[in-house]
Image (cartoon, rainbow, N blue to C red; front, side):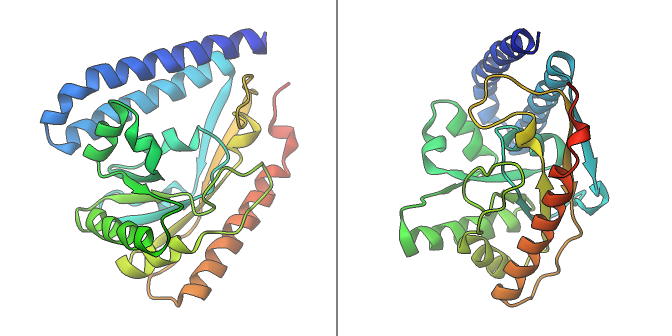
Amino acid sequence: MKAIRSALFNLLFFGVTALTVLFGLPLLAFPPRVMHSYLRAWARTVLWLLRGLCGIRLRVTGIENLPVSGPALIAAQHQSAFDTIVWHALLPRPAYVMKEELMRIPGWGAMARHVHSIPVDREGGGAALKRLVRATRAAADAGYQVVIFPEGTRSAPGEVQPWQPGFAAMASATSLPVVPVATDSGRFWGKRAFTKQPGTLTVAVLPPIPPGLPRPELMKRAEAAVAEASARLTGGVDKLVE
């Protein structure tokens, strides 16, 4: 039954996303806030499909730590494709930091650029880092909440990989508060996993780290906070519904 429900979800997810891109292109003529509202509706539709078809419920802890307006730097753990969707539903004006090749996807790339998504060239060295910092500063100046996955790639549940130094450079350049986030999303929507596992998926929003810390201390505090919260989440195997 899980396989059938997962197949139906996958079919609807890709279908809804394709239609979202098709009907979203005309919105490029309007201010970004219109596109944000549109993408929020898409994200909430995906969450509804996950709950209804796959039995995956979303629990957000520490939601009071998220900004209701104004810029911030969201340093989120990344285990699943789910993580690239959920922030459209949780933040008023998210600007994702994403791989440069994703910005080249026809239609989707144009919509992402319209809402200040920030491309990152992981092979570009120092020049790419400077572009990343400039784009982050521009997004922050425009009032966006910048979402970055500091590990640079998806990790397995319970695993915390070393964070990339670009994150600290972004925090330093913008003087934004850093909001660390842990999740156990990979336990329910695994990397390249066809079958989704029912249960309560948690996004744990941790207290903000104030700006102005030296880079090594900022990295240490943020990594430690996420690692500790991740260990707590992945230790609760009873949350899975068989």
